[in-house]
Image (tube, one colour):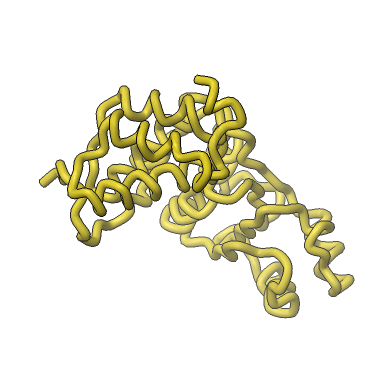
Length: 210
């Protein structure tokens, strides 16, 4: 049953292919991971900013390919383990390494791993377009058991930081406000939350002028 009012209930997050919205920002990455059998090497590096859907896409890849995923690779990663996983990857069990930044920016201390990662094919999820931001916001609300009107999505997107992380923070703030007040997520609720710029420093810079 659709949650009309915000209630403190647990909901499952959709991680299937039907829950992943393909747009210009992630189309190349989506296609590359769908064609793992054609990879020139059995390893790929998937790059993208926080909250961009990297883990979601990695789960789709893992389910389809029976491959291995190293999520959130970066500073502090077990380099010896990652080195051995890279060497063990095969066309029948490919390896996907998911990270926010290029390995040279971690940085990688193990020379043999650094050289392998430098030669690893990579794909990226780029900055989001309007269609992807809107789809992501709707999905995040659905994951919380909420179906919100299109005008709520449009109103909110016009007044927040236009990034993956901005959408995540906005949905979290609106859901918390709805829970606290026992209200549905509506434009009036969004207005009251998003205009509180003193507490929400992630608003768009010009939000106060809209």
